[in-house]
Amino acid sequence: MLHIFVDADACPVKQEVYRVASRYRLDVTLVANSWMRVPNERWIALEVVEDGLDAADDWIVEHVQPHDIVVTADIPLASRCLKEGAHVIGPTGKQFTENNIGQAVATRDLLSELRGAGEITGGPPPLKKRDRSCFLQQIDEVIQTIRRKHPFNST
Image 1 (cartoon, rainbow, N blue to C red):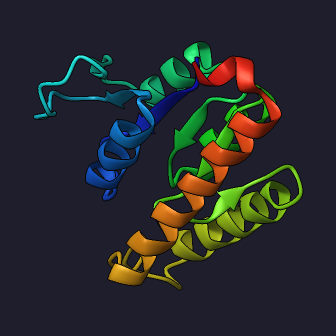
Image 2 (cartoon, rainbow, N blue to C red):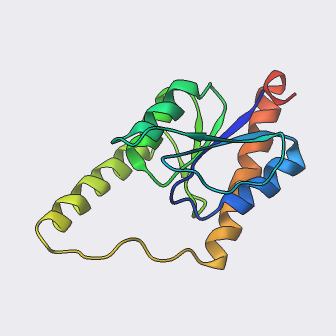
């Protein structure tokens, strides 16, 4: 069955994920390093992993199945999930694919080097209403595509 995994610690689109998952009757697992409040629905699970570098990422990669959806802004996690056959969407609605993940990794590495040299400060810009709209449109499109191509996975 199609499942949505959320890299939840800093995910700004959890409410949007709940809304889409409810409409399509999909299960959602939020993976985080600490407890957080989640809606009391049987189709929403919170998996709290031990503190540790990449513990949440490792848990997601171990449990994701081909054609599941992963919501993350973490580019290395996106790359690992793509290798498992999952679909990956960032909070701004950007879909990571085999065709664009290499460039995303290279850009991330470059920006990391620049930050290390003191050239760049600050994090990503705050999520805008337009980003949320793009995310909702993209996750809807991905679910529809998966259901068309893999109807066995959508029940």
